[in-house]
Length: 261
Image (cartoon, rainbow, N blue to C red; front, top):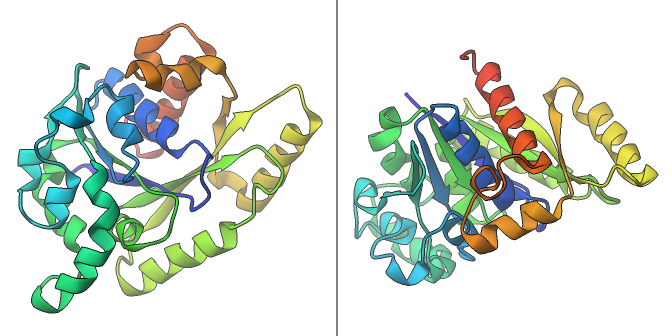
C-alpha cells in the first residue's frame, strides 16, 4: 500500500506547491511510483508539472462530486514513474457543493477523498497531496485520507504564527476522523543563509519540533521559482542546481524515514 502524505500549512507562500511538485518528482527519479494530487483551486501543482489546464477533461473536482472515478482522472506526466491527479478552477466551489449534498450522501463529506484514494492506494509507493492555504473541507478531506503530513515552514519572521491552529486541526482529525494520522516531518523552506534572521528561525523551529525537522533545508533560489513557469520540476529544469540537490536529499530522507532504501 502506498504512503499518503499531505503538505499542509494554512499560511500561503511557504513552499507547499513547490515542495509537492519537487518532492513527487524526486521520489519518482528514485524509482518510486508516485501520484501527485493537486487539491488547490489555484491549480499551480497542475500547471507546474506541465499540464495545460484547458486540456484537462476530468480532475479532482470530478472525483469530489463523484462524476468520475479517481482512476479516470489520473494523468501520466512526461516523467518516468510520475502521475498527477490535476485540479481546475471548479474546485473553488466544492466546499459549498459538498455541504449542500451532504444530507443526500451516505459518505461523510469529510471522507470522500479517502474513499477514492483507498481504491488506488496500492498502485503507488507515494501519494503526495498539495493542499490549499486554508483549513476548509478540502484540507479536512486530505487529512482524513492521509497517513501523515509534511509541514513546510518558511525561514522568516512569524514562521511559527498559525502553527498552533494547524496542530489543533491535526489533533481534531486524529480524534474524530483519522486516528493513525501522524506528522511525517517539518520542512524548513526559503532559507536565505546570508541573514542572521533566517538562521535564528531555523534554531527556533528545531527547538519547537525537535527531531521531526528534516535535515534538508530548502534554500531561497531563483531557479526554483522559475521552474514551474516552464512546467517542470527542478530536477528536470536544472538537474545540477542546489534546488535539485536539496529536493533529492529530502526525497531520500522521506524514503529512509519510511524504512525503505
